[in-house]
Length: 434
Image (cartoon, rainbow, N blue to C red; front, side, top):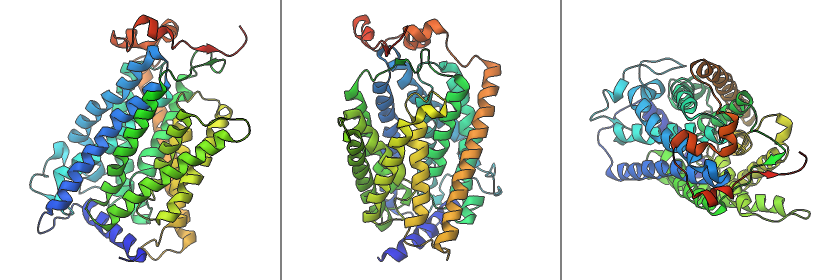
């Protein structure tokens, strides 16, 4: 199949799938692939828990991981009851889906493309789950667990579901405008990245920031988490083809290449001058590459995916170096790694795609991509600010100073990840001054 034929087929398949058209027969091969892909994406959230957990202090590791774990239960239920229909329900408009599928009503026996609609709903649920979990990285070690649960619930229904409708539903205004986002650059990474930055602003910095450096307490956990994320991301991207076909194959290979290029690029930046390549840098670089290629994975050649990885990693690396200029304590660099890389990937999708499939020239497609990025930033950023303020009226957003110093695990969960001796090793390091 020629490269020029890939994108129109992807768009045609997406249009059919998101409009909930039924096909004469289910394809068992496509169904098997989508079941596997959904399971792969589900594994990404525990992978994220390990990744984030290793980056925090020992006395906060359980709380950090629990914010990812609770997202799995919370969002799965909300997606079933109302999230799916707001994103993909029929009878809606350009901004929100109809209520035809409340509680997944009407999906029994139906097909989305060539797979059962229940499978499609489950696959999309995994995306909604990890989007909420990603935000937690900006607020670890200081946000009350209950406040995060309230915020995550509201964000999933009121921010994520409408944005998914805009981009991936055939009725959505960004879909109709021709915005390209194959697997979630705008819907997941840009929205989660800007929401994380806003949350960091609203909560304020950790005690002693930036004088006290909260160094990663367990680098092997970080590497384990990154490996699980890369493994699961193959289903995240290639599964978005909704079929076991050439489009899935292209998405799969670019999901191998771009993170590899990004990892090497990140290590190169770290090693420049008198620096040293670090394990945390390798893990961060490959995750950034995964983020950058996500919107473009089925729209660019394997060779072009190298460029996506290199530019995504470079932009995110320097965003991390200058993050202090933002004035927010984004604890685990969610905005720099997901927001920035997501924006780079979204724009490069327009620049490097084989063809827009809609007759658009390069310039208009780039403009459409930029509009989709700005729309995601404004919708998720402003919406997150309002939701955090609302949650703050219900319950305090931050733990107490004493709880923050001693670590949030015991106060929030009555558990510790390690013994007292091991936990003491994760105390913050004083960089200078009294």
